[in-house]
Length: 164
View 1: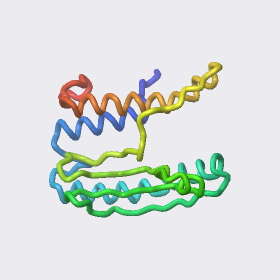
View 2 (view 1 turned 45 degrees about the horizontal axis):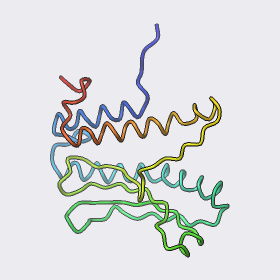
View 3 (view 1 turned 45 degrees about the vertical axis):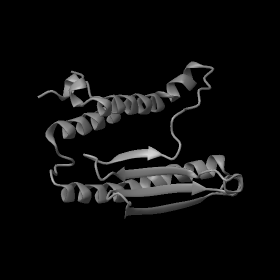
């Protein structure tokens, strides 16, 4: 018997929407509990974030980059954020932002989120089935972000799997 287990990003999205439905995050209902969970999430994200940026540095920047991590810190509005960035000489000379991964828990947010410094467009350069298959994680990330934003525009009731 085959068990139909959803891909990890979809399981994470269901947890996220269930938190909205239940008014909790990571089992916490208070802002302090959620803030503690955010700090723990930032600590857990440190190694994967550094790994991803190191891959970009090694393969695309030829080892010329510098990885920096900061946070979690309080922001001016009473929320919290942490960043992981990869900068390199040509980027600094051009005066553009470094590659940046951001975890943030806004003061008015129910739960934390992830984002990039400039994320919005993904490159599409596919010429065979193998290259198309390699995009599955990217397509999942795009669809996950899109559904999250649709719920953000309305509420968790848009997703039938979240109904009690």
